[in-house]
Image (cartoon, rainbow, N blue to C red; front, top):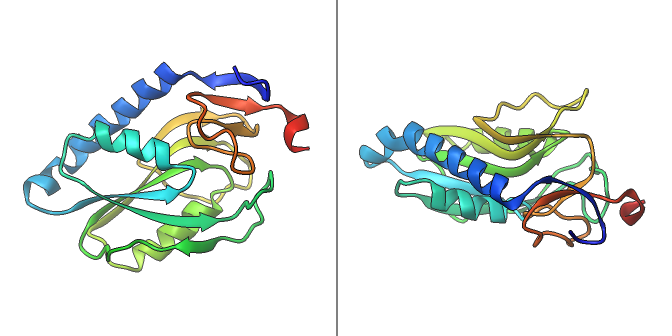
Amino acid sequence: MHKDIQSILHAEDEIKQRVEQIGAALARAYAPAADAGETVLLLCVLRGAAIFAADLARAIDLPLEMDYVAVSSYGSQAQSSGTVALLKDASDPIEGKHVILVEDILDTGLTLHCLMDLLGQRNPASLAAVALLRKELPNQQAVECAHIGFECPDEFVVGYGLDYAQRYRNLPYIGILKPEVYA
């Protein structure tokens, strides 16, 4: 365990198993569309969801397209700024595609809510969100997710793509960061 980690929430094997379960469920749900020749697009929210999206793509046994969006609401801070900025838009139009938006963590819900609104205006055939983690917070935006990997305590978590100030993304597990690291 990394010296800055207080405790491990989800071990590497546990994450792998859950990602495979979500991938199998998505494959079942989108098989009719893929069988009909329709496009299924995995749209990854950079940077935090990159590792999750890559593993999820390998767990979905269907033809897929992948694309990426980048947003910022944290910067190098430990708490959301309350403002979502679109830093990188999808490379190709999403109109008529079955879009699966892949997010790392649903905490305030602001980022996912803004992205779902924006993408919904672009006439996808369908739009669903998948999040690796969800924190149960009292003032969380109402955002529906087709699949949640794990419920998460209201702690600062890192690893498996999640970061603090661009560090810890490469940890193979999800852990709670020691408060003195970000205080």
